[in-house]
Image (cartoon, rainbow, N blue to C red; front, side):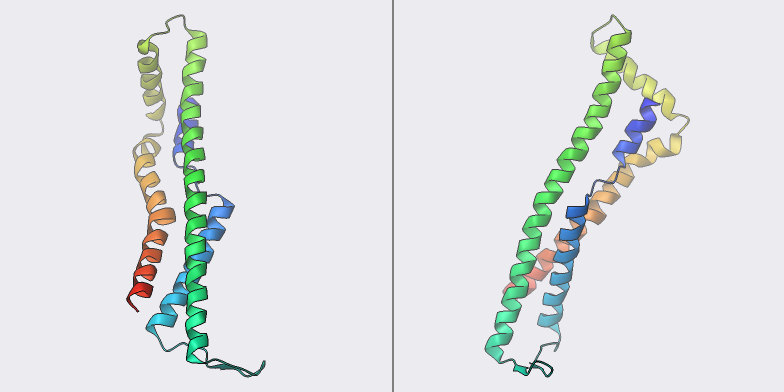
Length: 164
């Protein structure tokens, strides 16, 4: 069913593996920066290697951690934009293919064909009423969970770093 394919595409897992990895690393380094800034978790020495950290070295460590946060934020944004564009292209491709299929079956090439195709998809969706009504909210939840919350966390980390 065309409508079923389009609904599945709409709630399709947008995030690809490179995006997940960069998000994970971005959040890990953000947590490390927050812990470093807001707690007393600062390395003073590593006994097994015989290394002692001065306050200057500790400042360098936080700068390096913060640089990783920025690096992974940029990577995450690049991958996110790419994944989102690919998802939208796939979604619109499914709709276009459905309309093309109808065009090939019909001699009417007007906007009426688009309306008929849309109405037929709605009729097909009546069987999948729950999926039809929840695809938009689920898409929004996916976007919030996968993209917006991690970026907000990193923005908070950047603000905390700038304040200290």
